[in-house]
Length: 249
Image (cartoon, rainbow, N blue to C red):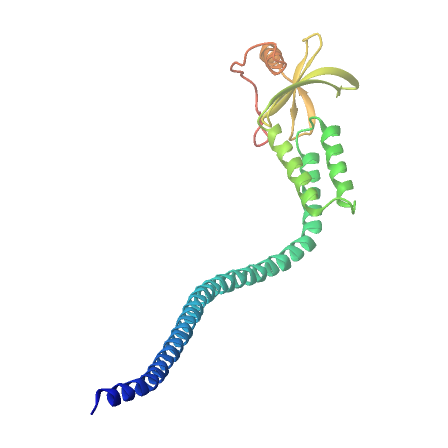
């Protein structure tokens, strides 16, 4: 082949090669764009998947927390229901007790009043007045049952305290046919004694006869000293006094 023909054919083939090359490059660009788009979709999918997984983990933790919370609440609610049942039972008992308190309080007060009337007659007016005050509270609808019981127990406590104290006071008593103001010495509930103001006459309360009886002069000093001790005018010391028991002195 002549050089001219070859050159001509070569020149004619160059446009074809350029077109083919351009087509190949275009396919490559298309493939690259498709690969990039695919990778973008993959990346987006991975991101969305990671987000969903993270959200699922958060929700799972919340669900576990709620399960524990609900379990604790169920235990608390059951405990509260049990406590309510217990309170209901106690309430029934309280209602029953409230119904029983008034008659019981009345019987206790009547017993206390009988005891005072049979006891050694010291501060008799004051003690019976206390009973009347408690009795008035029992008939007062504004006074609660607990307050009524408290007042009765307080009255009993005061009566019990009388048996542990040394007491001295003035009182008018009947000696023979005369009413005389004397000094009274009370030694708990062991004995109650009197002494006239001039200290010439001394005696004691005889619970067996229910009357004042005179003592011999040998007790005059002892009873005088006992009165001074009760009035805190002398230090507490031993006293030798007569005590009645079984109807004999």
